[in-house]
Length: 142
Image (tube, rainbow, N blue to C red; front, top):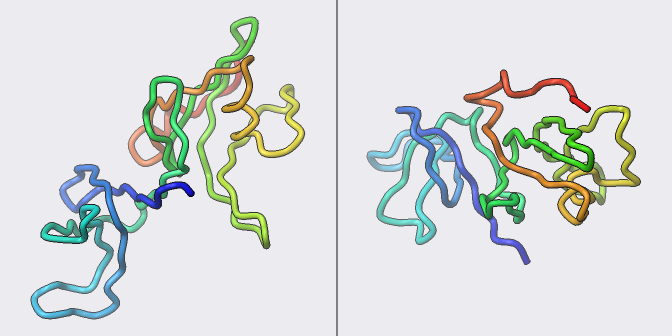
C-alpha cells in the first residue's frame, strides 16, 4: 500500500509535506483552515493555501523524486521526443487514479502515467509544479 502524504505551500509560500487536515471551525487558539502537519501529527502544523494541496502518487521519477498531483513532468522517449504534462487525479467511479495527458501523436492503451513509468522506452522527470511554474507546460517536440 502506498503512503498517504500531501504537500502544499504554507501561507508564507514555503512547501511543506505531511498529513493534511481541514478545520471547519476554530479549535482553541487554532483558526479554521487547511493544515499540513508532520507525520506524527504533532507538534507542528502549518496553515496552507488550500489551492496548492497536492497528494503523493506513491511513485517517483527517474531521479527518485516523489511525484505529487500538480507536478509538471517532462517525458522523454525514444528518438529524443519529449513533452511536458501535469499529473492529475482522476477519481471517476470505481477507478481512482493519477494520470496525465499526452499529445495526440502518442498512443497509450490506458493510464498514460503508469504506462510511461513502467516503460523502458520513456523517462519521466519532475521539472516543477503548476502553482509555481505553469510556463513549463509546452507542446511536444520531436
